[in-house]
Image (cartoon, rainbow, N blue to C red; front, top):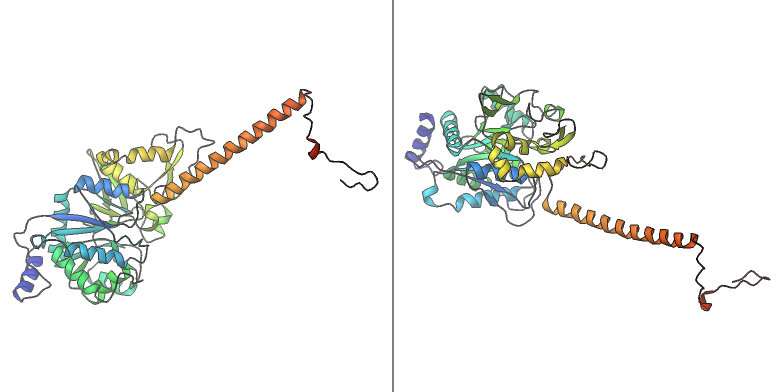
Length: 391
């Protein structure tokens, strides 16, 4: 730990604006996310952060940001840390993706891991590492080699990041000075470029997944080719249950991370045996399952269990039961309302068709009983001229 403090104290002694000594500072941490619209999958993040931290800040400019053009997200993060008070300059802030992340453990455990990252790296801003190559492949490979990294987790993912307030202010201030809210560059590319080529002295990756884990699958929950094809070795991340305790372990690094991010296909629904009827198949998602297994109280308290029961729809007979939507858990609120309105229209149209068919049936039955035909009004009778066959 003295390595980190020596770096901070050296910067402070030299009058650097980059490094601030936080010796003796209170242990405090905050969690924030960015979201421009509500989605059912956010229930996993809100449920987990509510139990671990008691609160989560949801940031947005009301502009309808869309992935991957999320420079606006970085500006929201910047505004958040600059709004914090001077007494919070040494507080830790964790920024997590709002649509596919879960926070586990406890506040104290997370603070311990953050302090350990400071001590082991001598850096002040941390990102989760992922196994899928993105931009700057060669540069990240060289950096991983320099740090003696032998596992696939060696590429920056901007979905999980953390640091002290003073460090995050420096990071965002310098990185965004030439990039406005509408800059189309993806946020991950900006963060990677800045971390690699401009301020490598400030930023470190959590290579060992001590705190952060980016995963596409977890053995014992949901794992398969979709994860392996993206660079995550089979059986490398697993659910472990032992002596009444449950945790998720990276078998390659021998670490038990606490904050999880399931990018890309990792968050989408996968077919698996139903929890309450293994003979049938249901759709399950990693964010929901991780909350269920690691934070069962939050799973029930935030009604994720009730939502999963509705997704499973086990009370419906197998023939009319519909359970074939890969995006079942990952649906915007407006999309759900759109589906509800569509079903209401279908039901209304079916009701009208039923009434018409019933009317035709009753008319036909009335005709079969030999009831006399109702005479048509004189004006509606058609006459045919025999010589021309004209009406």
